[in-house]
Length: 385
Image (cartoon, rainbow, N blue to C red; front, side, top):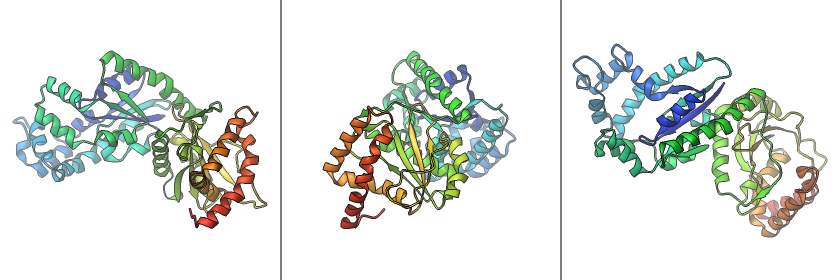
């Protein structure tokens, strides 16, 4: 089963994307629907709301008067936190019950309006955010009958656009027509969601041909989402996780493959977290148990995982704290960043390696020479991980 997270601000058009995914075969777990379900008459949720906010949030028939609740709950952060503290646990419990009931092999789309606020984003192998600018969203909400001041108050109470972008593996722009967003959602489903689901099912990683592209400032944000996902999946076994490799060096052309190093206490820990990493989209690459050694030490062992997501190729290097390969992976970008000549030299080596039978192997002689030079720089400058 693949679970993907779907979110977007009020009025962004998330419901249209959700409906499109359902037409494509996804099972939709709608947070809004569940939120209404858990506060129906007779539920513990409604009873808790009445106790917290008063009897005047009820209609004459005993059902929840949502505008009356909103008038109280959205007036300040304290009241909103009180509302969320009641509703969110109940929604989470019901969501899990639904997910547990679906067949294996299903793609489950969890439509969660407050995905940022609940901190759940790292638990999904893919997060889709539907976006539209504020004025477009306000206009849509007014057309639905919501007063402008209410629309803006609700938008202000939610996460900012910047916060949503930070968790977005995919940002779907819904500033255009409904036909355009439906077509974009369909392309995403067939070109990324379904291949990701199949790769997770089969334990396959994404491979791309060696090709250098200009440095992309977005690589850092991609790496951070991977780091957050790895930490959420593997927990305390992860001592630290860092963006490493060429994509972590500002201004350096690189393959569009993000490298992340996960530091653990022992290789046995690396093996223990392999299943957790695979479940969130990073299956282990078999038969890769070490980096090439630059000395006689045997402490160059590692475990390698690759991304299953065709939209974000990545490598996860799981190495042991304090071992030479773990330290060098942290040292390398710092050394290149501080030494323009070494950075330029490495770029030429990378370009030449593109025509070699094996891109990684072709760079090894340069790394063997660079290793002691980088160590000497670290000693001279006092660099520490």
